[in-house]
Length: 231
Image (cartoon, rainbow, N blue to C red; front, side, top):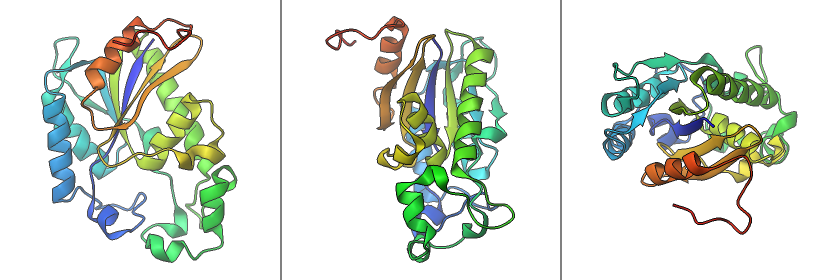
């Protein structure tokens, strides 16, 4: 029953300016993003995890580095960050680097909002949202198997990627994933059991992580009828 803490990277200047950064190089945390990552690291200081995995993009690696300095490896060794390319941002193709206000005038914008499963971003580098979701969910499932059923680990990624993973865990069609929030440096907690995932929190600030993981360790395959006793 591996438990994953899905962490979105801290804010960047592109986020603040309403620019779709995508996989463009040089997109790093701004001063507010650094504050967010530091605050989350302090909140989780001393917490034991099996691993930290992260998208290889700069802003996710920066966020993961803050966490790696404060979290503790369950094996007693130094906690190293494992790059996971499958957790990288969706390749937005020709949309990369453009303002969201400008993109909202594009014909494809409504499809991105209402039918994202059908969207393939324009340009030779453009990726489909369905492919992004498939690779991201596959990566989490692979790390669950690699780390084992008792693992608690951190996965640092991007807004759309995290929303796609959560949609899968909730049994939602990808077309509904825009209903999910994933703010900068937010933490969402998912416990994977042999029968189903249990989504324990979405878009949290990290303050309840310890409680949610304790609940996860008590969770069996079946959901408690009536909601259970909680912590």
